Each structure stands twice: as structure tokens, then as C-alpha cells.
Amino acid sequence: MIKREVCFLRILDHTLKIQVHWEHGLVVCIKPAVSDVPWNRTLSPLARKFRGILQGELKGSSIPFRAAGTAFQTRVWNVTCGIPFGGLKTYGEIASEVDCRSPRAVGQALKANPLPIMIPCHRVIGKQGDLVGFSCGLDIKALLLQFEANGKSASGHSRWSSAP
Image 1 (cartoon, helix red, strand yellow):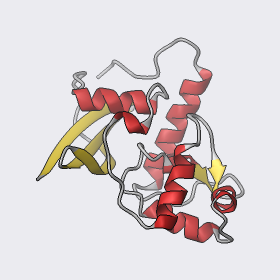
Image 2 (cartoon, rainbow, N blue to C red):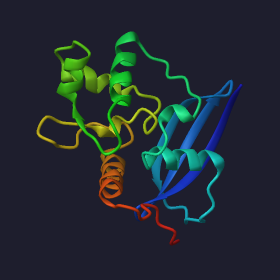
Image 3 (tube, rainbow, N blue to C red):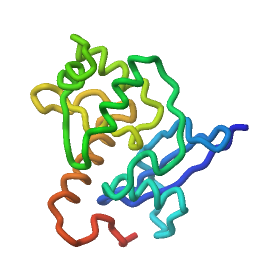
Image 4 (cartoon, rainbow, N blue to C red):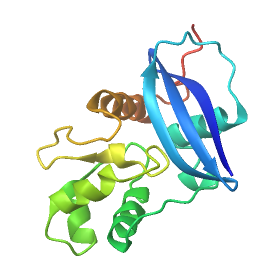
């Protein structure tokens, strides 16, 4: 049985709409996008978990999921899950960790990631530190990285806006 759910989060000055596809009680796909929907300050239980993941307080595994992929994709996704909150790795660094000579192959594996945010592929950057490749769009990648950078440097005060 497939169930669809939509939740909204306020992140920096934007509302993030997250479409979630469930199958047999497991998240199998998420699609974040910037939304024009006004922020209403109410978080669903699922939105609270996504907020915890984005704040570095919870791991992606705090939401039950199944990420279907090839053996290579799964190796890339596992390495990507090891990138800490606020941290970055290049496609080349991940390629080395999975014994692959091709950063482009890593990019293709991350492009196939059905669970961005939970498998934090937004933390993977180009070798010169540039923002390249993100299946949800570079605007969302930049937003997530800026949010994490703000959260990492802000000691003790909320990274989440309560203003509408």
C-alpha cells in the first residue's frame, strides 16, 4: 500500500515542502521543494522528525525507510550518511572511499538517491568547493547548506524561524 504525505518546515526565510511516499510503513521517496505556501507554525510529527534531522539532532534512520538501489549506489549512500551535520565531502573523496575512480559515478549514484535529507547528499560538493549536482535543485542544496552552516555556528539559539 502506497501512502503520500506532505509536510512543511520553515527553514531560514523559506517554507520547505516535503512530499513523502510511504510503502508498507517505510519511507521510500521524499521530494523537498521550496513552497509558496504561507508558514502556519504547526509541525506534524513527521515534520518534527525532519526538523530534527536538519538540525543535526536526529539521524535519517529515525524515520523508518527503505532506499532501493544497486550495490554501488548503496555503498555511496552509506558513506554519504556518515558525513556529519555541517560537514562536507567532495564527490572525489566519496569515490575514493568506495574504491571507485570516477567522481561522476558517485554523482550519478547520488542523483538516484530517493531520500535526500535523510541520506544527506546536499553535503557533497565539487572538488573546488562549488555547488554542483542535486536532484532537488541547487537552490535547495544551497538553502540546506546555509541552514547547517548557521546552525553549526549559532550556539544555543534557534535556527528555526517562528515568524510567519
